[in-house]
Image 1 (cartoon, each protein chain N blue to C red):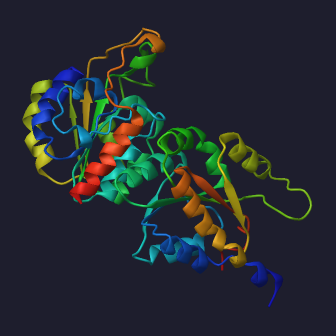
Image 2 (cartoon, chains in turn yellow, cyan):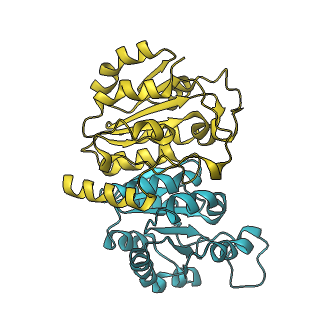
Image 3 (cartoon, helix red, strand yellow):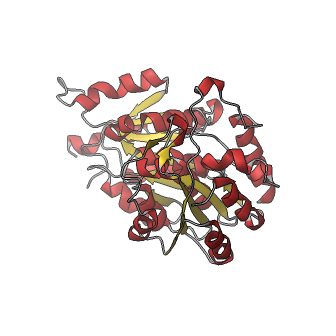
Length: 195
Length: 172
């Protein structure tokens, strides 16, 4: 099983000028990013919506790759959105799943059927033309050129070590350096310039 | 001309208003009365349809579209709007997305008492969320659609159009 930090470090060289939705990897990505205006670290406006956000961005900006880092808790809440993504089939959408098997921010309770879920199979069944599943960082690293080098939509399920937070929410260290409003303003400005 | 023809809200009018207001994408889940509008939209290359299978998905998709510079509209039924509560709050309201939601007002009637509880709660839901709304029932009401788009842009908030003619307006 890999660590989310290692996964994001392995991915970083492939980011290019893509729009990137870090989802629950934001605390690691923020120290790796070299293009913050195109980072969409919105936190968690409402659980289950990251895939939809990534799809919307990809449809609005077909000229740019969208790298979406989703989580299994979110996707279990919105499995049906995978059918919508597959139907729309944006070739610029790269959908990574960070699967730690638990609700880490609420103390580590397992997501339903955590040990048996095969998210790549679900995505494949919904119509994603390319899907992958990884448990080891070395395999993930070796596959990245192929994953990024071909058109999307592609779904990449990565099994990671859970990092459970038990600190009360109000006492947790804030890793974000921008407010949600600033993220929105920065992204729209960067995309307007890039059009 | 019968009464239904007099009061009808034509799908051509609705689509025309969407295009006039620059809509690029329609994120939708069809209800029983919007098939004719669906067929019109599907045939029109000016708008792209994004079908969802649960209304709660529509808000985050629309937020992404808007963040990317597109102009989406959400087309759902009031039942689905209730289902979408937290998504509307989180993905539309908290991100200040200026968007119009066209919501089929199932159960709406001007005559007698509606037996449909979703109609009972529709406007209460919008009031609880502080979302402004406009009722349209026929083509004569259609200028309100442009009003809703203008208000959404000006306030950077979601604005709802309640389509109160759903039992004959969108069907043929």
